[in-house]
Length: 405
Figure 1 (tube, rainbow, N blue to C red):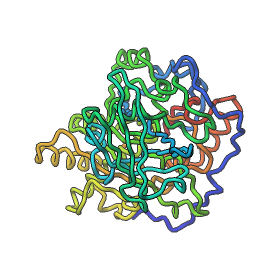
Figure 2: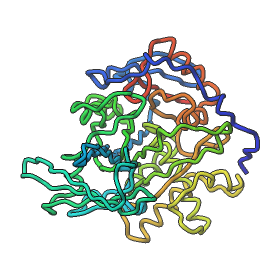
Figure 3: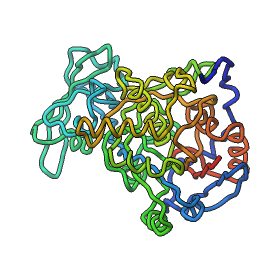
Figure 4: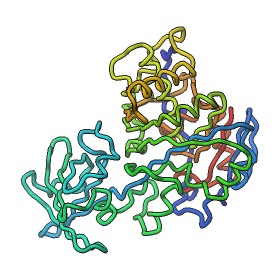
């Protein structure tokens, strides 16, 4: 069994990040960023445009094709008070986000409410949206005040919710960028392969990829495929407990396609995650297969402790676990499955699927630093020191790394 008796102190996962090292805006050219390469303990400095030549032969990349929605909506009351609605997830959270985005006429979402004290429980707010197809009247009222759940309605009802947020909302930039979103962010804070709407934060490791990078990857016969993990605001939630394992991990919706699982089985010893969200999704998939093999209830819902509760001797091989999920999909005649994961990857966890990761440089004391430390051990400190000493740009719009333990 994975023993996690010793404390994991938050202080061990801190580092000093000067404010001027935070990249508040993207580079003009996505693949012009720096790339720190960590391979077998050795560190070198490259350009991201060289990534295809730096990947091990037969690598298989896994991308997260979620798409950020303009999740910040503002309503102005007759008094002049402005209420901000930051959409988080459809309600109930188990509802497939892809279906929620296709809703017409009305939608129920959970969110964070700015200036909520000025919004009475019985009060409905309204705004008029100007669209190329004419004006749209959008109203919002409380659905469940205590749980911060709201109901939005719009006329004409023929518009989809995806269209409504495009007209009404702003892109929700990470709070550490300390600036308002611009029109340019609608494009730059989105990967070029984003497809499935529903995230409130970008899988930022993918922001560096360009058509030229994909062409070069294909010329090297390096395979790749996509899954979907809808990144939630919880990804920015700081750890506030001295023992990081006491942190309450957020849950995110993930979608796995049958075709992707087949590809993973063909390359199970060469998988490289593009981003921490892809790694979360891939590692979660293993444990969902484990739950299927063990005939456990709710196999496609994973809590943050599950991965630490199964004795090593009872953990199936990666191939057996992936086969279990594939067999389930075939047996139920499903091309894909919508799942919920709260997996919490911390040092002491044994990585199952990922042989490496392409990732940006993350906030001190974050759950993402814990994930990196799980993959490469204490060398994460050396990697980050090298990046700081070599003028790398940090966080969402910053530079990149290729980590191959």
